[in-house]
Image (cartoon, rainbow, N blue to C red; front, side):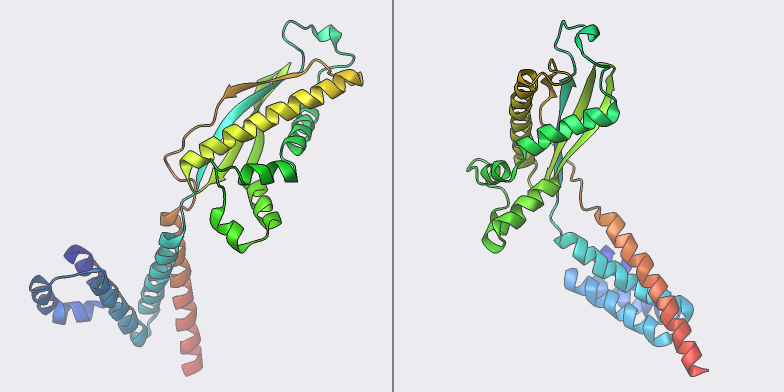
Length: 264
């Protein structure tokens, strides 16, 4: 902790460090340091640089302040993890021939629309509500005590993502992802979502076959079950902290410029 205090002291102006640096080090060696001491030294450096008013001092002071605020905000943000699985749509049943299809195989847009139809069926309002309330998942427990169920369902819908991957002429792979603050729950949930998607696909394929629609022979299969993500996808705390540093430095320069114009 003393190393952090010494590092924080480096933000004091050079004139201060030259005059009081040795005394400060001696005092630090004879005392016990904690996070409160680190913050006190940083705040002292911040206030001293603001009082000096130069472009450099103001940019350093406000940059430091922005860094502290952004880092504190980032540390309070919960981690989010993404788990994903992969499903495939085969546009002809295995062993089928392209000539059996009444028209050419679907293009990329059509394939995406087909998957969207499966997703709309699988992730309806009632379906997502049932998943959220499953005892083995117990999703958004805190949010359900504060927000209407409709808002929680919309939050879950926004956490689900389906994107096409590279396939071949007769099939398309889709990655099904779910983001949540618990990696194990995220994995379990994405597997439930994939199962719902497969069930919806079977129902829609049977309906298409009975109505003699295009591509009645399409089938779905699971290529990859939900993965376990150990590295959080969000937030990027380092990026947030440096963004605060940059914005604070810019604010310091602008304030210094305004003060000089006002004094002129």
